[in-house]
Length: 91
Image 1 (cartoon, rainbow, N blue to C red):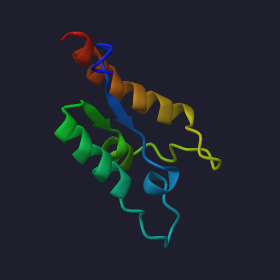
Image 2 (cartoon, one colour; image 1 turned 30 degrees about the vertical axis):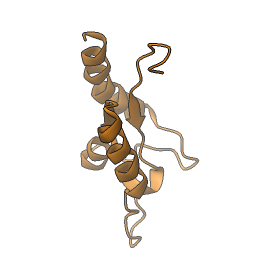
Image 3 (cartoon, helix red, strand yellow; image 1 turned 120 degrees about the vertical axis):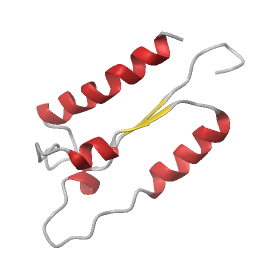
Image 4 (cartoon, one colour; image 1 turned 90 degrees about the vertical axis):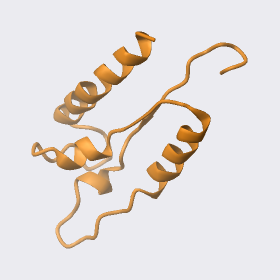
């Protein structure tokens, strides 16, 4: 991307099992998000992790059972990603 002067940013999307947990099932750790976030920090690539917002949402479930977002999942992602993307475009 740098070679072609193409901006790069990363949007981390949590898995269904990380935010719409089944009763009695332990939450899945966010190892992947941590690894990508650490790399992005070293590479100076902007990253937005949606997991904290999805986990904190009171409007659950955010996913359908087959892993796709429900309309409220899409709305939450847009609410979080909108300012992130707008900030990148303003640079």
